[in-house]
Length: 114
Image (cartoon, rainbow, N blue to C red; front, side, top):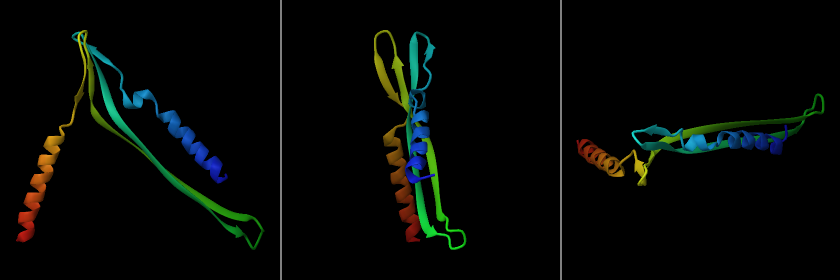
């Protein structure tokens, strides 16, 4: 398999998995509201391919390659749709994470001085 064919096959698989349902889940209807879960989906991949030249024994080209891929999905909130309004409700509060990070630095500073 040549390098272009190799990356074309990986790209084809990634596009096949990048469906709308990966980011927006199935809508849920309850009490006159429609709730649509929202997630951030991140795809990453890498690979390499190389040739060492001709084999001395049989004259064949020596080549090899490898690849890896990963997918990460992180919930970010929901979209709430009612008869009167549509709004996005985040599930994570950034201020809370910033406060925890600051607390961690302060505790680390005091323990580091000991």
